[in-house]
Image 1 (cartoon, rainbow, N blue to C red):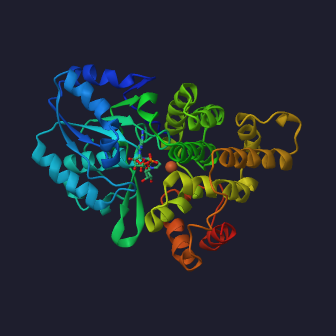
Image 2 (image 1 turned 180 degrees about the vertical axis):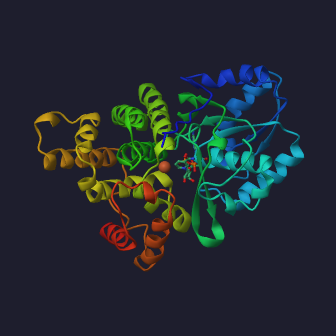
Image 3 (image 1 turned 120 degrees about the horizontal axis):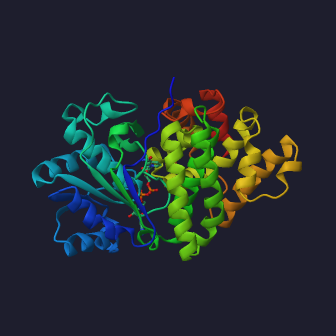
Length: 382
Ligand SMILES: NC(=O)c1ccc[n+]([C@@H]2O[C@H](COP(=O)([O-])OP(=O)(O)OC[C@H]3O[C@@H](n4cnc5c(N)ncnc54)[C@H](O)[C@@H]3O)[C@@H](O)[C@H]2O)c1
Ligand SMILES: [Fe+2]
């Protein structure tokens, strides 16, 4: 079977990239934007940076900000109703994964109304039409939702995060502007950055990985390992590096899938509202140890990209340990907790393990897994 690769039509990179929104909107003849953002970004004036560009160019818009972190079916459905009333003809998503994912779900449902229940979009849904065109402006350096074909919506009634995979949702233009990320506090920078590292590492060892995706993932690990500490200290180089590194990781994993770090993180977001990046970062080293035997020589390349020296003279056991230790060190340096003790209740583990096993990212794991194995992995973390 041929390998498919989907990327944005156009993307802009670098501080100030949002200025390009005006010319792109005009060039495409768009009339009115439906802007999706979240209440905190509106409050802290982050959304306004883009609204100022639209205002400055005389472009009209309507703002929708009823979007919570780990967005819900209700956030999507309220958004669909507001979009229909707005008379808009394109979407501008400004925010982290939550705002961008909500915009994707809205854009898909507007052009495929038979999926208005949202639930039927889980997994790979047979949508017929492309989303309403989306301009995506990430404000975190983590999910890379601006270049992925995925979106994640929480089914609050079932405490489940639904991973939806659909090439028709990919934003037509991404504006990856590190200035939009500069207001992130340290904890959010660290968590979202570790989400990006998890994408790069899981994408590199996932079952469907191949040369083209490997190229993106190895480069992403290298850039993220070099930049995340600086980004947490809010240096311009660190921010620029993370803006690019997370995007490069997205170009890869979106096309080949992930693994059970994400499968185990998703139920924590659904049940406890744990920030996605924090959950991934805590779980990553433990699952790397579990998966090691199914990864051939790949941990040598991960260790090298993480900046470990002398990997060529290491034994398999040594380079695998070196890769995992480098991930643990980066996590510790940016202030991520070591375990899930403060988050997971022991009695919830059977639900969490079943939910993780059912997750859309699980089949991508390099090693065959089971509910029992996942149970043991959660237990090892509390
Ligand atoms: N689509 C994908 O491919 C993909 C991949 C990974 C994760 N996700 C999903 O994305 C969501 C997580 O997204 P996220 O980690 O980007 O965070 P988020 O969008 O949930 O935002 C978290 C918080 O950070 C705040 N914030 C965002 N940018 C800020 C900034 N520049 N300054 C100050 N505050 C800021 C927001 O207001 C919000 O309160 C989860 O639902 C996750 O499952 C999607
Ligand atoms: Fe993620």
